[in-house]
Length: 273
Picture 1 (cartoon, rainbow, N blue to C red):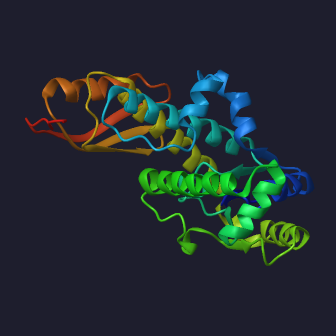
Picture 2 (cartoon, rainbow, N blue to C red):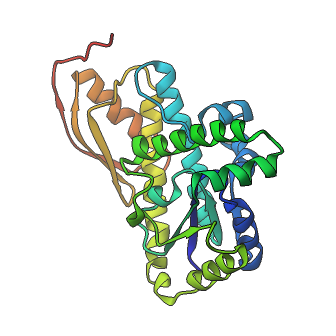
């Protein structure tokens, strides 16, 4: 069965659909509540989770680096859930996090702005003007998160397999369409590679998180890739000491068997104003 990801605009009614699809398919719905339930097991408390979830860092201060590290931890939670099988991933850029996996069914929910305002204000019993403000902020924040973190336009239709305009279609029709699509035999073709991709992505995220939490690595100018249990670097650092520390930190991450690659040393530091 395919892993299902759901991207949604606020006020589209996507959550109700996700819950029903999860119930019908006997999938686990990995949403904000599920992540909050699991977060303490990964060292994240609920207040910290609320501050960083689906909010992009800017990589300027040490606090920003920790923000990015915590976002990585959220992604590791999501990826560990995927390893358990039969999941619906709600938000958090899951369709982009798993872009290298073939058996992912990527769903997008949209609707005209005023339709979403009406739905949201009725559902939450709030004034329509407040609903407009909250939806605008939500669209900006979530779109910015996807653009910053995955370098993709949130509204690019090619990032999704199915897009539903909830003003035009009933919930029951949408639910039946998703269930039918999830059972498409072509989505089974990538199942064998799924575990390998997940394991490699988790390992890369753990290494990246170690760098972000370190005060000894600026970690701006190099990339991390993983093949099996081998971690490779490319790019540059600012000193031999920084290079040695990068190798040491990566080697210390559980699951890493070898570190290779060629980090170039450039004696240059960016000036932050």
